[in-house]
Length: 484
Image (cartoon, rainbow, N blue to C red; front, side, top):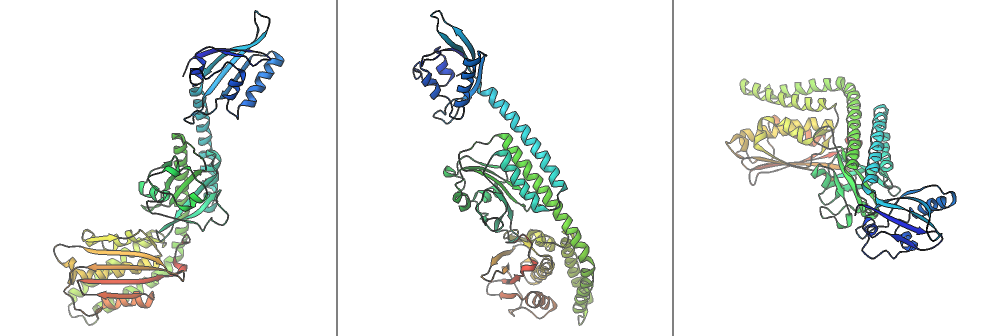
């Protein structure tokens, strides 16, 4: 399609002459140009036609050299070409005036210049947003500014930041531009692979959608279809640990290509948001930890005293009692360290179980969403699972040479708005008594923590092995502020 062609237009007429190669320069089918000014005008992009004709009129009026760059009308593949035309007025042998000159395809040059301008604009926006995020104390304002910058720089009508809910069962719309009124802070998107956000979490790489209507990797949530989304990008916003903060998404209501620089810019925005989230979470956890230290110290000493009294009193086997006390104290210490390390804030259940059950980790099968639990419940749950593991080491699978104990958990939302944690300890082997829960200190501790302290419920099934199920309501004031 490249090359240079010559043209000549007889002024004040519809006659326009092209050298044969100009059809190829304009990516037109052979014979499609009919030698008229009208044919040329029809091939100019509608957004550029007025500017091209104004430039011609200026040359005719002043005699100044003619030069313009314009886009052609869209071709069958949807692409347009950038054409540069230049020339001047000459008088022919017949005495008529002609505007004559050359045309060439400059698409590569124009696109390169535009890409450079786009990159410079994106880099400037990243620098400005980074400075803003470092100076701003209000995290919500940082989220709002992030979606605003993405919308402006990428020239898109819809942008959003979805935050991972504490229950790890959905993503909540925390900031956005272009969405219907009333959706911010309320609208939720599933994390299943079928949704774009869910697919992004699983793929853990930038996801570019050419056309949502023909997308085969996922269906897209109803939220996107309700807003007529066709193209877009999404990327994971990393979290403090393995658990992500959420998903950043930008969307267009028409087919829109995205360049490599667009993706790089978008990832950089998401990383600044992630760093801000970590910074603000660390700041809040530090303040909370300082307030909690004195209060927790007294409670800790009281709990240690209770464990010691219940373990040693009436126990004739001092060595066994000392070992039991040491194990319980170790579990208490690990749970306290984990919760305190996070600033006495919400704790990942996977990390909690791995720490509390560290000696048995290779013998455990864990299954459930990586939900966040409030600190008080995390602390007590560490003691609960330690007692279950101790029981299994004495009477069940963990005391045998092989076999695994399965731990499953879930968080459900009741009609009363209260979320309930359900955890099942499934031990396929037991030689323990068929009594419902035992009368030792371990059984008393489980009952005290689950039933009395947390108003929960215990179910034990010894029909085939040993299955211990607990249900604990998680009070609204204990859940993280980001819980919908």
